[in-house]
Length: 95
Length: 494
Image 1: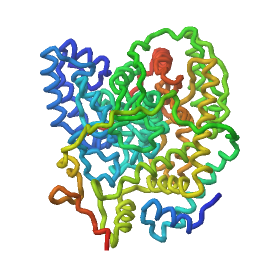
Image 2: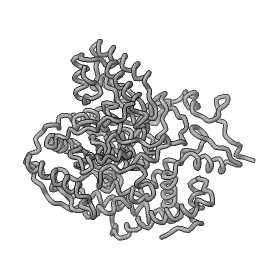
Image 3: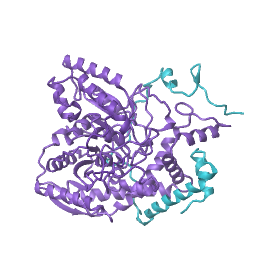
Image 4: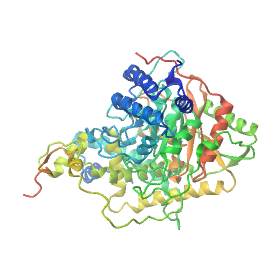
């Protein structure tokens, strides 16, 4: 399977990475190189094989459904690029 | 007083315990050494000398009260992947900006609880994506080792834990934390003449580690000796409710494995690791390892791991896919870098285009593609099934043998820039290490010889799940037999 410039633009949009026009072609080539290389997995017969989950047999642990944290507004906002009155300031998203 | 920075962790702890020197003294020696060396090596991206001295003084006070922990007073370096409360943590990515965690990773919390002292944050490939430490936003790390051909070319310390490896090799910390997703502990250890161990997946908590590929990421130490690595591993690993994949299993004292006789152990030598075009130095090194273990009474068994060649391609589906999901959180809204844009999508796209480096973008593109509608089964699910086949290969041979012996890497350290143009040739660095990540198994690299350029090379021991002890036991035997004492000549201290 190989990707086209069009595919690459779509994937860049899905990944939310701005890709200038002059970088599309090189990115397409790079991705195709890597995708062609991983294509060899097609040789492996995985009929009736379960996908791997973990090496040591284990089940997902459950925890008590209780509040363990909170009241740390200052810490939550400490790294915000912009904050005001205890809120994150984000760009307007609704017109 | 002898040079305190030249001590092993084990000897330094003895010295601290016998009050031959204080934590403040040894910490000051390291702070000075880093000050002189870091301009040349760039191993530390953030030095925290004041915090280090403060922690050292507190440690000396605890010791005076008879409250010494296992690592009491020992100055360590911390890979920038581990969140450290109040100390900038960026995984060497521009997108995290000046992010200063309000919490501590479990691994580092374990170290501080046992009295360790932090010297600073260590350089690494951006988000641990790289094998040469050339993708860091903070610049390349230089390997203290140089070829003996007089060229003085700057060599890579390997990656992604390049800062950890370079700092340990140049005596800029007693030991360092590191992390391994496809070989990022073991390959840099091999390139710098240090010891690195990745435990079984789930031994060390991932809480507070900046996530790359969650089903593969595992913390471990880089240290000067096998014993030092065991001391570090004992403290770094723990069961942790904050990580749902943390294993609730008994944790032995791994230092007890050091010096345990290996006589009677069965050691597998996998034929698939004898790759085409393997340098003669690596062939020789591997054979030497086999001979040493034979001489120590091990039985060497030729084994086959038929799916080995599919490990790297499977890795380059699984790791980017998980990365694309994990790194979706970097949107510039709640922390880190934010770029301007005309609308919300623009802001996201500009922020991520500016904040991520070329290799990270490449992997996010691959990961997004293989997870996009219609491709999940063909790529991610397929790769996860191939992982099962790779694990089954290991399980089959481990019915017969106790551990596997392989080279750690297909070459010694290469020059900076040498492999940056071809991603796949860079990825091939991890051909011997990535299998243990995919299968979740423990693996250790131990330095045993130098190549024709005088550069260190390591051997890898892969063990059964939860059998770090076998890895350490065999590695300690190799260390004992090799008597690898070579050190790089100090050219880096200003």
